Image (cartoon, rainbow, N blue to C red; front, side, top):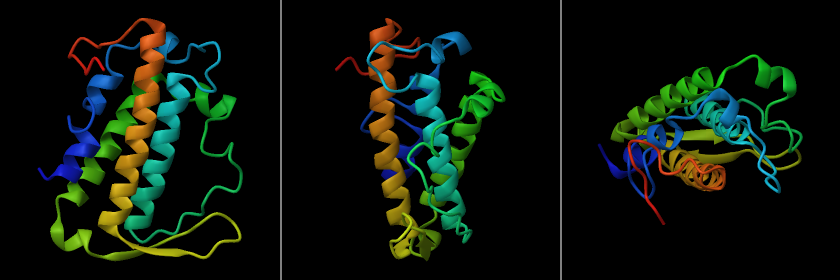
Length: 164
């Protein structure tokens, strides 16, 4: 497994995503933390949202860039339609799919069209560059999830995690 695939699914610059997400109840994942703009559930939903857009883009599907900053976070009805285990499973399946593409050197070099914010031109980038962007985005939001877990007193998870 190359480093990019590892950054998407395994321990790399941070604990493995499945470890970061483990041992959280639906209630705890949805619990608001005073001063935090999003719950753990909302952070992961956001990750799954952008991961799916990346998977679409690298597959040649030009899914539009969200028009509003609230679009990549769940509405109340979207949130109530999917349990924490379902959301976690959906995210982890997508991460494995992205890692599989990252491990394919021939596909990684392909150039794809990535829609931009409304009013900005479509960007052209390699599949590898789009996956690097996804891995960086995931790392940022997983850091937020770890911090929320720390504030909730549920870090590290049973499988362990970095203490810093």
